[in-house]
Image (tube, rainbow, N blue to C red; front, side):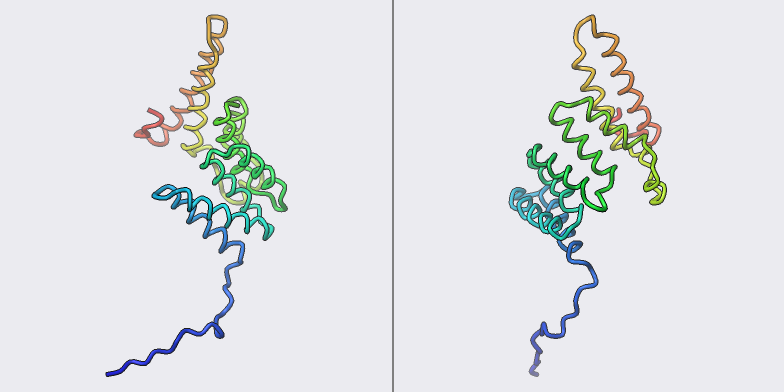
Length: 192
């Protein structure tokens, strides 16, 4: 019995209902996530190229996700530049995401006070966009833990008897953050 097959024709292809920028962005995110396994460098290069295309298509998602790639690669200056571009788009990238990535970059660069300010802004600031979208990051234990860890690192910078009170204050603040996490998840390893 013979089977005849008809070759696929592209002449009847329907345009995708998914916008081009979103297809590039989703592709880049997939590559970024794959960059955690195997031959990481190749996936990260391709992810960066995809996010550059998203930026060219006029979306803040492009430079925002480029900042993620650059951070992962340790290219902190490039991550800062990408975050600055993402904040200038209309509409800009979400404030909380920019604050998160700025906090991570500042912490990595040793600007702990700036990182603390960024992480606190995610947990404490309230503005209409959060309420409209139903977001409440005050219970996000990943951010809470990152703030706690940054406060702990900041305490280490306060050395000597003259700075003992300031060191204890940072340690107390760090402990308070970890207690918040434990109230949400009593088995959280990082908080313990």
